[in-house]
Length: 328
Image (cartoon, rainbow, N blue to C red; front, side, top):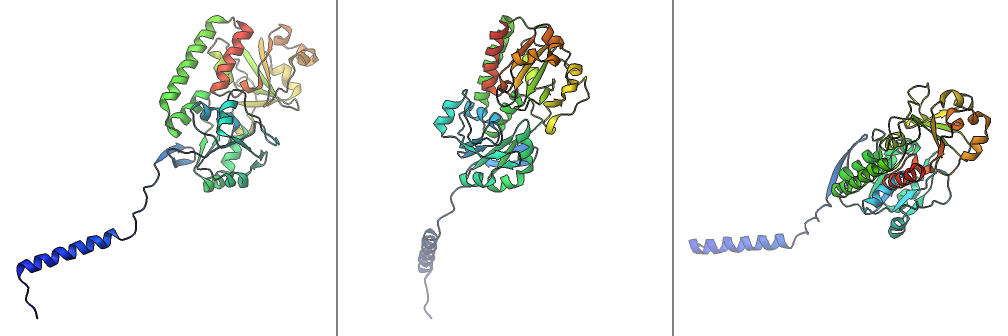
C-alpha cells in the first residue's frame, strides 16, 4: 500500500476540492429570481399580485379611468352597460385607451365572459366598485382567481377618493401621483364653490334607466356628498323614506311611479340617465306627476350628465365644470 507524505495529502485534498467545485459549476442553472410581488388586503382576503402588472383586465367601466390617470396599462375592460355589443371609450380617457389598445370584453346580467378573459392571459384582474359589476365579480371571484390574481374594489369604498386611493396606494404603489391629482381636485372644488350661487336646498337626485324606471340616489356618499362640497346640501332622501337599496350596491333605490310625489318633496332636484342619456328633462316637466312636484313648480329641476352618478376622478373634474356652467 503506498505511503503519502503530508504535503502530498494536502495537494490531493486541494485537487478533490477543485474537482467538486467544477462539478457544481457544471450542474443545473439556478432558478431565475421570481418576479416582485405585492400583497393587497381586500374583502376577499389578502391577494398577492405582480408589483408591475402589464396585462390588466378591468371588470368595471367606472374603474378603468383610475388606471389611466395613474399611467397603468389597461389590456381590456367591459362596456359601460351590460349586453352591449360594442363598447365605447369615455371621451375623458379615450386617448389613453387608444394608446393602450384597450379592448372590450363581453358581459351581461348573467355574468362576465370568463372564456374571453382567460384567452387574454391577464396577469391581474381588477373588479368591483359600486353597483352591479361588484355583485357579479363577487359571484365569479373563484373563477376569476384561477385565471389571475383578482382584486375587488369593495363596497365600503364609497367615494371616488376612497376607490382611487385604494388603487393608487395599495394596488399600484402610485401615492405621489394620487396626491398630486387630488390636490388639483380640491383646489378646483374650492374655486367652484366661490363662483356659483347654489339652488335652494336640500337637493335630491333621480336616475332613469332606458325603460324609465326611476331610482333615487342615497345621500350619504357618492354624488350627493361630492356636490355638497360646492354648497349643494343633500336632502335626507333615503333616510326619510322606507326604501331598500338596489342590488346591495348601496347607492340607489327604486321609486315606484305612485310614490314619486310622496318621496320627491325637496326644493331642488337633479335628474340624470343611467349609463346613457336616457331622460328628457323637458318631457318630465310636461308630465302631470312631475309638474306638481315642488322642485318642478319652483323651476329648480336640473339635468346632469349620466356619468355624474358614479363619477371617477376624470368625471368629477368635468362635473365641477358642469356645475360652474349651470350656476356660475
